[in-house]
Length: 419
Image (cartoon, rainbow, N blue to C red; front, side, top):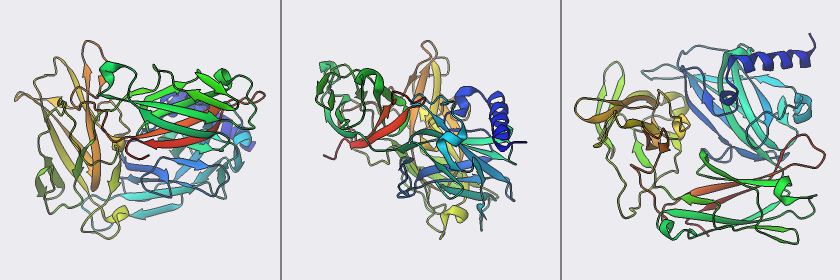
């Protein structure tokens, strides 16, 4: 069978096997896959973005809790800024081959929980993007895309637009103490722009969280090749609060948020009960902006000698499960509000849950979904403050006049505490 026809048929089968929205988001489809890390190799963890044809790479790491050796493959697909498929042939956006096999793996060592650790770095000689834009990484088993195990979003930028941004007080007087407003300017230089309001749009998000993101398309002022976005009503973000934090690098000593550690045939960690942090005034707390680090204090290589533990969390509130649902989320579970992150409610008046995590340092928050409104609220129990330290990502998309796809032509990060 023609290779390209085979790829097309596999993509078609995959589309039927998995919902459209699930294929183009950060997802883990098989529960045996744990501790998924995806980052620019310059720093772990970091935002998964690379410059086109720069030699930069992203790295994917994950554990298979079945142990032993399994055969995993991966491919890339180009998407638009809304994370819909660009509907391009792989030959239009990929160099060399359309897919590749994951060959880098290692077995866990001296751990209660046995697992196999897999990793890949790309672009590489076998697979590399040809054009800039959003890409979805798809990993599947046995060279069969109906056996999808995970998907990850990443970004390839071809810098053609310079970005300047700053943080100012909210234009809404009532939000001055809770919000952080982003103003920015784009300079498109020699780039061919016929209509800035249709050819260019900018996605701004907080701490790499898609659910916080906003698209900006309407330019407030145009000054030569400079586009100025300073409208009072746009890019006004709740500052939210610093993330909660727990550390179980050691399974011998209790850290700040750990109440008890039990070791028998498995590791069990009981956390101190959490409370609402929605207070009138901001309190500084060091965090990692939602990220997590796989680290173990007693080992030498956390990739394979960090162990897993059963962690038990509880949350004390006057609300009950009759009022709504409570979720515990962070980068470690892609901020997903699902049955895996949902807390149960007990007769003692507490919400509780159990997570199975690899040793390390983790950030997390609680999200409430009211039964009446069905709307997620990550502020009701966490609070929101102008002083909160946050990172903002600004991604600039451009639709060339004759192209069938959207390119990523500018990228910048902005930190609330660094000028």
